[in-house]
Amino acid sequence: MPGFLDIHGEIGSAVAAQVKLKIITEDERQFARKTTKDPEAYDRYLRGLYHLGRYNLSDAQKAVKYFQSATERDPTYALAHSALADALMVFPISGDAPSSQVMPPVKEAIALALQSDPNSAEANTSDAQAKFWFDWDFKGVEDTARRAIKLNENYTLAYLWLAHVLSNTGRHEEALAIMQQALVLDPSH
Image (cartoon, rainbow, N blue to C red):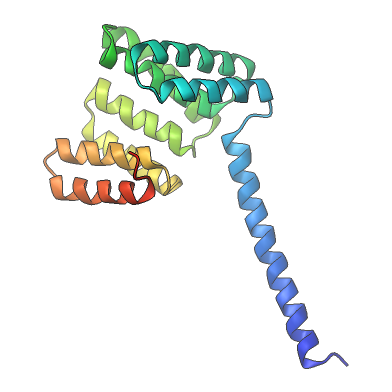
């Protein structure tokens, strides 16, 4: 006959096994969603992120090449498509490329990212940014940024775009509250 401690041990082991199973399942889902199985595509994506983070025209041009190379190696790599859109959006802001020239490849990259992973916070945030810069669709920006936050509550850029559109529509107190949340997540932004 099992003793009192044996039963608690078995229950504890069963609970731990269930919790571990759920954590591993979530981690595997996140890993599968955010990475590619092609290490070369992943390397090119990371190199592109480095240049994109410098946020100037010359580095954005380098980032675009890396992201294009990553998406050529893995056409279903949602993060690389999303980052490609983000890098292309730097051109009219930091350079002299007309928005009308940049908008079609941006929207194509976003569509491919969302097709590959509709639950990507990054792709939804890129979509929010494009709706802001190219469409002036402030309701769409807000809805898409909120969706991105719901998909990944730790993705700071989604908060930044939500705050940006709230401020641009005169909802400054809401924007400030959202920015405070973003600063808690990442004080460097």
